[in-house]
Image (cartoon, rainbow, N blue to C red; front, side, top):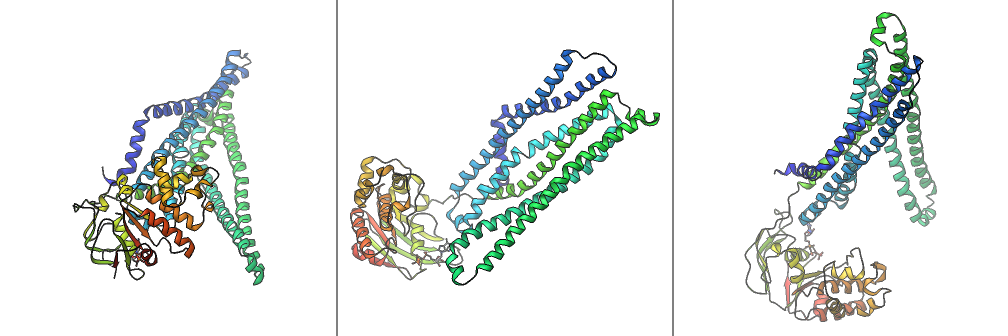
Length: 541
Ligand SMILES: Nc1ncnc2c1ncn2[C@@H]1O[C@H](COP(=O)(O)OP(=O)(O)OP(=O)(O)O)[C@@H](O)[C@H]1O
């Protein structure tokens, strides 16, 4: 399968897996179109009976009522089926997006902004949702309905059919013009409201500064400007909305009037427009029914157009190359080797050049070097997030990039400068949703000197996580508990006490001294490593 067909293949799989739903959808749409055609025909019969002074049977009256009920029920069923179909489609695409997210290389997240990626999941995902629940399928259903009504009209009155064939394109163009203007007005209004929404909290936040520098007028004027923009946009939308319906109704009346005038006039036109009274009533009902699908088609085309950019974004995202690290041979011991490693995020601008060092198992090593020398980059290479451009890395018998996700936590753990919490409970912060026994968690809490703090929480480990429950130092202890719970052989510490005061740092050092027993420790922090008894210093130039 070529990469460009990824999205199509997901859709094909969905269609194959939901054959029953597709068949049901086709049946319901066909039934709904047919049911929409029948009530005017029954009405025609009733009026014809009345006009010839014949009595109407109860069955005929009842059948008219039932036809309307069945038509409405089928219409609702059609909408429900289209919504289910749309939801299933969206689910398939959203799942594919989520799966892709975990397969992308770390490089991707450095070259694409978080907001950009988020927008694929939210805005583009929503556009796809609308595309399938109120776009493609609904447009097909409405188009078939429109064609079917025109065919019936042609069979009854060629003149009226021709008249509608002439009028319909103009009505469609008018409908689209109104819809475009309305959407433009809505967009302008949304933008203006968005600006107001960001301006208000900003003003409140800066209120002291505004008063101090006497900037009230400027704030008022810009607030006023956005409110005016919003008001004008809403006004424009309202004007178009108020003219649309009367124009459609007047056109409808003109079409019916023309039909009546010609039908009642001389013989030349009568054969062309001629109708019984009943047929005339039925035709009026059909003419009225033409406008609703016409209006829907306009909106549906717009949804499809809006979704085409979203499809493009999603297609590009799904076609990003997967992160498939190459497997390299490893050394057969528990030491860590950097063997003539050259690496740059841009291979043409190497940051580490021909770097070689060995760290023996159980050693406590510090990486030093000027800012920007590449110390954190070494950690990223050691944890396998990036591959060296040249040379080899071996991490306790393993090639870091080739490590399977489930092996990673057993081999190394990384504690960074800032603690990153995950949604869930305090326990989840430590386990990261992996399964650990109570004893293992208890041991991690003891090593990180955090047991008492956790026990003091209202629900202990099961307390919902909120970063305000902990001080900055306690959050770092939580990060140490997270690091040691999997009992890794290597601990990587990236400036973990950089923002802490001396007293808190002492607590961290005590926790680290306990946690580093029997492990290889590599840290980027001169002060910390001295206190922990560093056995080797590696200078990165
Ligand atoms: N994802 C990235 N993409 C491109 N360049 C990067 C990336 N991460 C870091 N760099 C660059 O690589 C160089 C080394 O960064 P690194 O963070 O490894 O340095 P460091 O020695 O840890 O610095 P510090 O002591 O200030 O934390 C810097 O010039 C930085 O701008």
